[in-house]
Image (tube, rainbow, N blue to C red; front, side, top):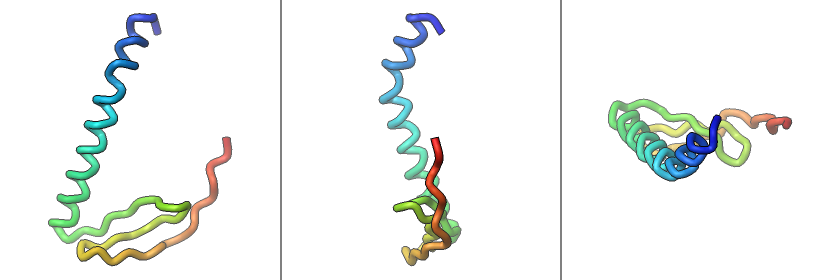
Length: 66
């Protein structure tokens, strides 16, 4: 990648991250409104959350090896 392309990516990164965060919040909102459970990782565990907010740990996850 040339310098101009890299500079463009670095300038756009905050906007891309913000768009991803907004999309995630909207996806969770829509899933809950349709009565669907959501799953996410928190503190090294896979968590399931019901639309009414009940949470349960499904299983611990192995750390990622670099």
